[in-house]
Length: 198
Ligand code: SF4
Ligand code: SF4
Image (cartoon, rainbow, N blue to C red; front, side, top):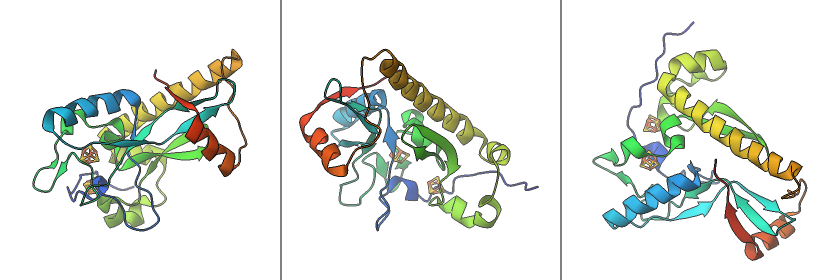
């Protein structure tokens, strides 16, 4: 049994783009995006998002948007709310995914997610030998606050997926289960966006 207790070492790595093939992903729900757009406007900060988790609805020719992600395209390739001397400047209202970090939602398949530890966090790297095979019960103890937020994040995700399934059941939408990249890209270019919220 380990006595490990998570404490962020405030290195800031999680607010930056990771060089190489790994695509940094800070998922944001549409209502979080709205809030961040307002703050960015007040501060005169350039803030842009790109779509993250989306489902093509073939019945209505819509792209259902579940989450977005922050575009890290400034000079430093970091979140626009990160400042070198202060760190995150929106601590109290930062997105759920940031509040849960270094716990994140690992996508198992199109409709299923699971709470997992992100190995790119420096605290996790420092304690990798202890954390690499740890079970969920121990994760809850080591990452107490973060686990609560990760659970909230996961529950929100589940509710959104459930909403999609209910709409499908009611035949109001039809989600394609198998699709080629070419077709998917064609739909992304031509179809209307509809944000899903719960
Ligand atoms: S919102 Fe804050 S914690 Fe989240 S990526 Fe941006 S600066 Fe980092
Ligand atoms: S990478 Fe980990 S230790 Fe570093 S700031 Fe982010 S959460 Fe904290």
